[in-house]
Each structure stands twice: as C-alpha cells, then as structure tokens.
Image (cartoon, rainbow, N blue to C red; front, side, top):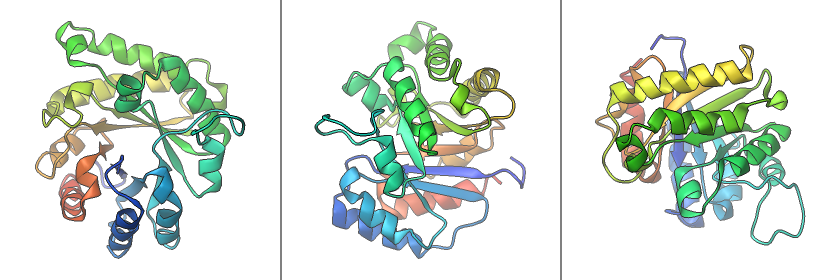
Length: 254
C-alpha cells in the first residue's frame, strides 16, 4: 500500500448498541485524532442515527445507513428510504449485507434497486458480496461473486464517474471467527475490482474492502494486499477499545 492510498475503515454497529450507547461511542471516537490516511465511517442503527450524526458534525468521521429501501416515500411500514437517510446526514449506505441476504432473503435484484436509489441521493454505496461455505467448498465462490457484481453494476448508467465500495465478506467468515486467508481475500478482491471497473467504466472509482472476523491481530495482513483498500468490521467495531486497536493496527500497513 502506498502512502497516497486511503484506508477505508467501516464500522457496522449492527444491532449491538442502543441510542445512549451509540452516542457515547460516537463521543469517544470524536475525541480521537485520526491519521490522514484513515477514512472512517460508522453505521449506527436507524434509531441512533440522528444522535450519532450530531456527534460527528464537526469531525472527519462519516455516517452511513445499515440498510435502505429504494422507494423515496410511501405506504411501506417499517422501511426507511435512501433519500431519508441522505436527508438525515448519511454519506454512505450498506447494500446487500450477508445478513440481509441470508437472514432476510434479499435478492441480487433488490440490491440493484437499492443501489440505484442510493446513487440518486448522492450517497456512496457499499455493496456487500460473498459466498457461503457450501458454495466455496463446491468451487463456486468466484461464480457467485461475479453474479452478484454483474446484477448490481451491469448497465448502471447512473454510476458513471461515481465512487463505489465493494465489501468482500464471505458468509462463512462473518461473525464466526473463521477469517479468510489474506491471500485468498486478495485474489477475490482483485476479481471484484476487475469486474467492477469493466462494468462501471474506468472513470468510476471502485474500492474493495474485506469483511469477516476482522481483528486487531489480522487487519494489517489484509490491508497490505494491493487490492484490499480497507475493512468492514461488525461486533469488534462496537467496542471502543477493540476498534481503536484495529485502527492502530491498520496504520502499520501503510
């Protein structure tokens, strides 16, 4: 990794923190002095979003949505649109997280609809892709990823010249402690970047991050790989001490 390359550190707080806990963690993070190489984004729960946005209003830390819906407004009980998240102060939005795909049955087609809505609101999409253990064991990992990427980006005219982050998060590694080997993560990241640039055009920016049991003791190994530009971290990012350890370890890769 060169000195000019940014490190994307994405903290997905999932459903680990309530409002008070989220604001307290945001306050503690705001007090930290970030290295200029770090681009940090936190993804709080929807109920904590306003408080977290307020805490980071005078900082370099961005805020993102964990999930969005593709219709701006309407009779859709329980949903929150990409437009509403943008109006609330978000700059990024997760799309197709493995938990959304495999626990809630979200399809590649729905991920594509959400990406279009996210781009329409000028948010940066963070598309999550990855294979299950069964798919990897059967040699289908690359095929599964390519299908997810092609569904998301083929003929995406509104994406020309835009920034995209793609998170490679093998389903079998998310929350299991069984992190992917850095060399294999690099191989998959290289494929993802190639497909992304082919489909989106050379004037679009495609950054690949790794997600899946990221820890302070393995984050630097991922970030030293040339096609891995950052990490997407779940539970460990919701604890101040562990998250700061990950941040410090990430800097050793520069």
